[in-house]
Length: 122
Length: 107
Image (cartoon, rainbow over all chains, first blue to last red; front, side):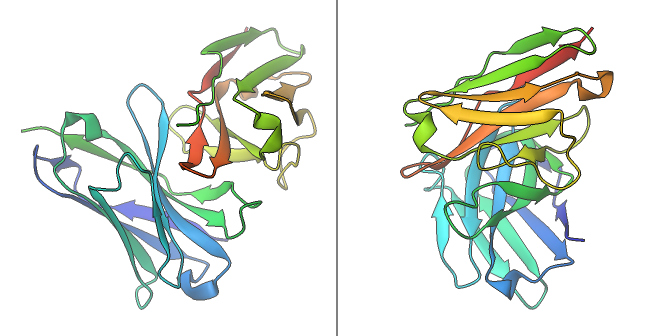
């Protein structure tokens, strides 16, 4: 059974960089069958896709975040990560990692991690 | 950008049929997925490729997608179905788009 677990600081100061890691068990990032994804959920419940990465190094970003977000993977640890620079209070959200099928017809997310709340505040 | 619109809230009596809609330009040309999120939990996919149920999802959940609207139908709604529901589609520009979510109340 595939499981994803997010980790990272729960509090980040404005203008600083947010860094999160997703640890994957039960599947290998190098399997080639999936995209590995970051999604966030704002306090008002809205969901926003941030980015995904494929084992070959292909990365895709939400255009609204592309200038601030970087997704990367460490296959030796079976982990992938997100950094988001110059954060503001608007980046306060629960951050989820998730898995998505490789083809455009397999564009659903399953499973999701439990999520980690990140608050941006001084 | 591509937008998906959902009603903020839907109410249904136990045992009745609930319909949650998701609207977008030519949405019928895209595959739609649906997620259920119970309080304090992560979203969980309950429908993919418009009308396909993952293993373990009850048959009372069904989906359709045509023209500009996708619909999630819950037949014989149960109290345990009370949750937030989100639709999601893939767009060639923004890649992933989520609807704003619908809170289903069973009362």
